[in-house]
Length: 114
Length: 111
Image: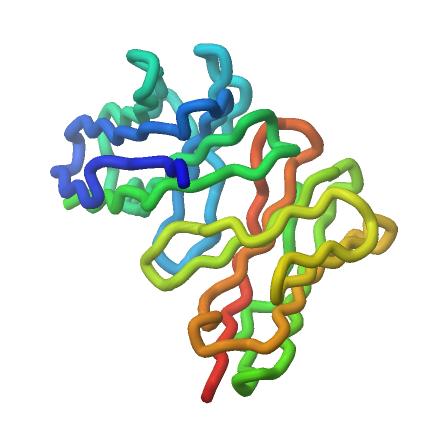
C-alpha cells in the first residue's frame, strides 16, 4: 500500500540552527500538509500546500517556517532558526483532494532542539 | 476558536467487549470527520472516515455521526489487546483544508 515517507526519523539540532525535514507524499496525492505534536499534546496543523503554493497556515507557522516542493516528489519543511519550543514530532500528510478526503500520515520526524 | 473535545480516558474494557469512544466538535460547518489510531510514539493511522449522518461500519469498527448534536463516535466490537492505543478524532475545519484534532482518548483493552 502506498505510504508517506519522512526523513530523517530523528533530528537533533542546536538552538538557532536551520533544519529541513523531508517528506515524500503518496504519488497521486495533490494536497500536502505538515502537522506537529509536542510530547503529550494534541496534533496541531501547521500548513497545507497545493499547486505549489500554501493554501492555509496556522498561527504557529510564522516567518521562521517555510515549505517547498523542490521537485516532483519531495515536500520539505524548513525551520530557519530553531527554538527550544520547536522540539516536537513533525508529521507530513497527504490527501487526494482537500480536507474532505482522508489525510494519510507519515511516520514522523522527531525534532530535538538542544 | 474551533474545538474538538474528547474524554482523555483511560477507557478500560475487557477483551471481547465493545469500546465506545466519543467526540464533540464546535464548528457547525464541518463536513468531514475522521478517526485515527495512534500508538505511543507513532504516527496517526487512519481508521475511519464519515461524512453523512448515521452509522458507517468497517469490520469491527463503526463510526456514528450526528451533525445536529455535533457529535461523532467510534465503536470497536470484540476489542483486542492490540486495540490498546490513543484514538484521535479529527474534524475538517469547514473547507479550510486542515484537520483539527482532539486530544485523544486512551483505550486500554485488558485480557
